[in-house]
Amino acid sequence: MQIGFCAKIDRIGEIAAAGYDYIELPVSAAAAWTEEEFARNLDILRAAKLPAPAFNVLFPGDIALLSPDTKDEAITNYLHLALSRAQAMGGKTVVFGSGKSRMRPEEVSYDAAFRRLTDVTRLIGDAAAKHGITIVIEPLNRSETNMINSVAEGACLRAAANHPNVQLLADYFHIAKEGHDPADLARLGGIAHCHIATLEGRQAPLQADEGFTKLFAAMKQTGYQGLVSVEGRCDDLPKDGPVTVALLKGLWNEA
Image 1: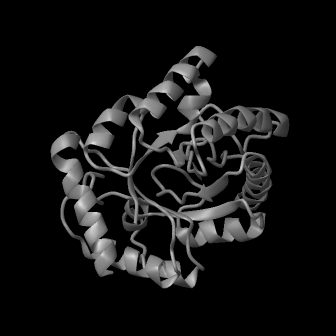
Image 2 (image 1 turned 135 degrees about the vertical axis):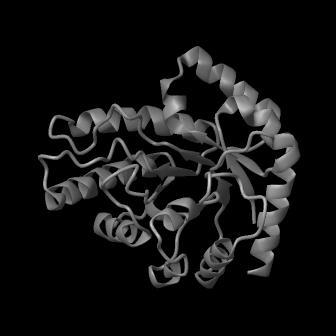
C-alpha cells in the first residue's frame, strides 16, 4: 500500500523527507500557473524525485458546473488545460470533489441538477480519457456541497455517467462526518482512490481508529489496488509524517 499526502508543491520537500510515497497536488492550482510557473514547478517535482500520481481539486470555485450559464465548451477548455498539466506531471488519477463548483443552485431542482451533473461527469470522463487519466468522484459532507454527499450517491453518479474513465473515491473524514458506515463500500462495488483524515480536527492520523480499520477491511474485500492519500492537517511533517505513514501501512496489513 502506498501512502501519499495532499498538499501544494511548496511542501514537497517536507513530504518526501517524512517518508510518504507520493504527493497529491491540486490540479486547479496547476491550471492557474503561467507557462513559466508550470515549467519551474515541473522542474521542482522532478528534482524532488517524489511522484505525483494523483491530483485533487479538479475545478476552481468560480466554475459553476450546474449553472445554466456555464457552457460545455468552457468546461472542456478548462479540462484540457488542467488535465494536460496533470498528465505532464505524472498524474493518473484526478479527484472530482470541487464542492463549490458542483453546488446545486437554489432555482434548479435536484432531479435537473443530477441530470446536468451526470452530463458534466461524462464530459469530464471524455476529457480524462484523452490524457490517460481516471477521474474519481469524491462524495463530500453537506457542509461543503449539496450534491453527492455519500459514497452511495457517488456510486449512483458513477453508474449514471457509465464512463470507463469515471470511478469512485471514499474519504474517511466525509464518511464519518455524515455518520455513514465505511463497510458499505463492499456493497457498492468498491472504489478507485481513497482519502483519509481524522474526524476530529481533520488531522493526519497519529493513532488507530476503529473506523480506519473498517474502511480498510471493506477496501480489501473488494480487492482494492489503489492509493491512500492523507488529506488532513499536519503542522509538523518531519515529526508526525513518519508516524502517520507507519500507522496506516500497519493498519492496512492488519485489516
